Amino acid sequence: MKKEIRKILEKTVKELQGERIISEIQEIKVEYPPDENYGDYSTNLALLMAKKLNKSPLKLAEDIKSEILKSKKNFLEKIEIKNPGFINFFISRKYLFRKIKEILDKKEKFSELNIGKNKKINIEFISANPTGPLTLGNGRGGFCGDVLANIFKKAGYRVIKEYYINDVGVQIKKLGYSVIGGFEAVYKGDYIEKLKKRIKENNPEKAGEKAAKIILDEMIKPSIKKMGIKFDVFFSEKSLYKKGLVDKIIKLLEKKGFIYKKDNAIWFKSTQFGDDKDRVLVRADGVKTYFASDVAYLKNKFDRGFKKLIMFLGADHYGYVRRLKAVSEALGYKKERIDIIVMQLVRLFESGKEKRMSKREGIYVTIDELINDVGLDAARFFFLLKSPDTHLNFDLDLAKRKSKENPVYYVQYAYARICSIISKLEKNKTIKKQINISDLELLNDTLELNLLKQLIKLPDIIEEILEDYQIQRLPQYAISVSDAFHKFYENCRVISEKEQLTKARLILIMATKIVLKDVFDLMGISAPERM
Image (tube, rainbow, N blue to C red; front, side):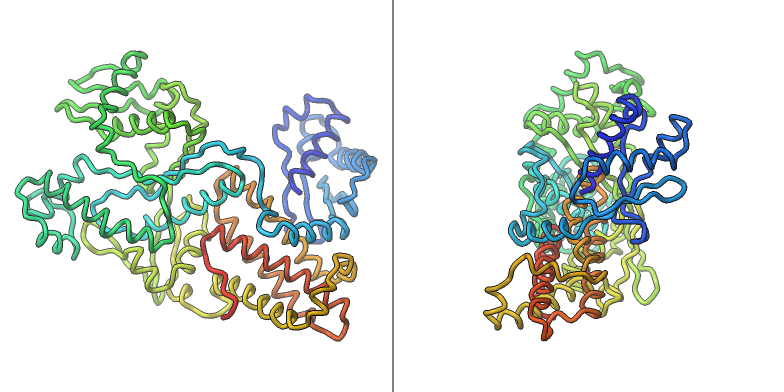
């Protein structure tokens, strides 16, 4: 619906002012008003135009309104202008009824978008070093990456979910020292003590390689499965060296003139492409840096035919954004083809107190422990609730609470309640057989219409997530739909002596069930029919 309104506004402005003003405004924004009295959708377009044209925003808003009304768009009930120049749109009941029929006909396909056209997208996430178990931070990136992949699939993209294994380098050697002992030992915990008993090796590199394989196969991969995630590809950093791809990429950059030597090290001219400093590819001692591997891996992804690369990185990886975009441009790829989401930290609270965590000190909470404690649904939902670029405080007590204060319990209870009502009505075969969309004409209550309006928003929500990767919109939308349903249910009797009204409300909650189930599937949480 937002896209449809944007199209109408763009067409109207072109007719009123020509192409120039559209290019100056760049993007016409259509938002959900904070108050239902201000319509179902709203735009500040007239205010933006007024600044450009030095005209009255109210007068411009009225001109836009008049032009739109001439086109007689049947999905609009009315348009209102509010100070200082907002244009507010009210959706017609007939249009809402048509969309509800569409939900019932298409079911989960209602929210599918034909945007991707089967283009290949690579989404890399988690990619934790195989030096220890997956912790809360890994869990946050894991759930967000998995759900974003679901969103892209919903929009018609061919998505490959990938895990990059850092199985060479300094951290593997340090893992080896942690297992066999030595001054370079940095990793601690019960898992290290268990590895010491299994690995009989004096060479730290070999000990580290064996330990990393055990950790990946027996700790990380089972945790990923427990998280409900299935990767399409596990890509080994070591394979880049075995195939000589790291040496090849350095030679390619040298051929392009983007390499220089300084202090016996080999540098990439990263500042030439907008980075804040040049980056070392090979150190003075001849050891290749992680960045060298990253460049070879980046080229490998593009060589595999991906049109877009999306990466979820940890909070300590901000510097990677500029350097990866810089080297992408140096290699001849548009930097817009790479999107990097830097996940912020997770803090765990119990009984009002924060649990301190340090992976290297052996004091941490694993994602397995969290899932065992609160359940997979709560873990997923709580991690998805906040924007990836903000810190997340995970409240253990709230996540375990069986009440409406717990958001995941609240939305699942709405679904279970709907299933219970439908189950009762299914026993009445006469009602079920005689359901007709024309019965929806009886829906006039504000709470009924508010629920209808929430249900039709799902395609817009998906499209917005595709644009900015703000995955928190999905659980927040589930809460909004549940809010609308609970208010409707508490004030409007679904099953009553009025058979036609019962039918109409049955259709409404059947559509609500479809939408909620679709959202739950996208988030990877269960849809319980009883609670």
